[in-house]
Length: 211
Length: 260
Image (cartoon, rainbow over all chains, first blue to last red; front, side, top):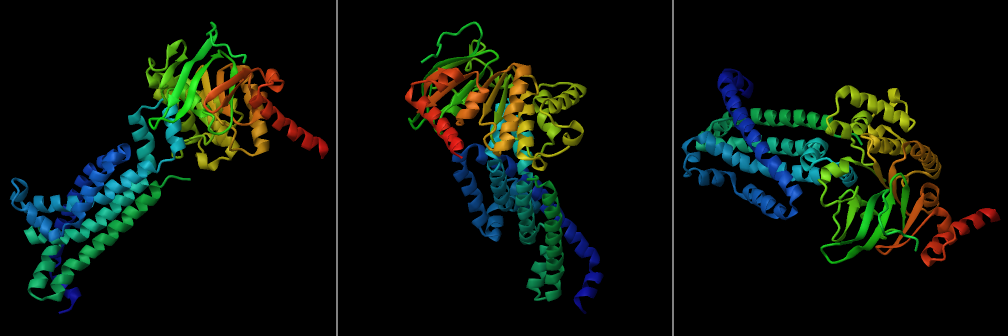
């Protein structure tokens, strides 16, 4: 039995796992964006916070993913459900590129533009929402893109705590020494990553400010 | 020194012993005392690092004096709400600071929009402003700054600063980045504009001929202090060494031209 016929036979299961995977990644990205962009703005505004915030995000990145899932397991509420553990761990991984790019985007805004905005009497919030964020949108989105592709890959580990997703096939395949099972998880994950990379890349290009 | 330190009734901006020191202890400005009269064009002339730009930024409170005070309309800038103060003061800088993600129309209607004008009035004002700086509305309103030449960008910068008809206009090296011919053109346009609008204008420049051409008075700055206040005529005949050095430099240019 070749890989293609395996895919057609188990299409329903694979689709189910792919949808679980997309849900894990989607929830993670929403959380990571909701936390990462404000933190990035904070880093850009208060340079002394840059070391502690980026440092922490960096440390989270260095913890091996399996170990991170293990650390979260005994925590109250979080540890109660597998998808909570997985989404928390994935969010911690996804934060760094988003924080870093948001901060870089905002500090990269032409100082003359900021000076003019202040000089014309825009309030700090108006400058942030009408000038700095729109001008750094493509840089922020580049960070979201990197984080998304990373998360799609790392999310396969979520199966280790029973959170489902395409990792289920990979872990089962490893246990049963079955290449086709491994590919049933790996190929859709790779396709998802490529598709996300492409779509977000197009969006990023559209939002790039003209020079 | 011909500076008048007492505020006459027509004074709209007044520096009273204003100084500015960085937190590192470095002094950028000290003991600055002079007034700007309503409707005049005062030029701050000096070399790089003389403190001209800092003095200008004290007026719209982009920096706050560490010594003395700066008064606008009789009130210390520190008593003003900085946002309200800046909305009354047009600001033009050399790099223009036009928003690259805004069209010309959005750029020049920024302050009216922030001030909550109704849309029809904003639209009409935008067209009026473009006409004022000599650009065709139909052709330029929809363009983005990167689609403009340097001279056009600078004109839009002036239009944006004039949008809400502020009584005061601050200009920091407004024509410095332009090629000599365009610069001359825009200076002339500016003179004609000022003839009509009668704004109170403070211009920063390091160009002596620009100072003498545009200024009703010239404030000469050196090393963070005011060296003197002159009418253009007085400046040309001043015996003050720094002023004389600027005039000599002008004459050197004329002699060179004469020798050709």
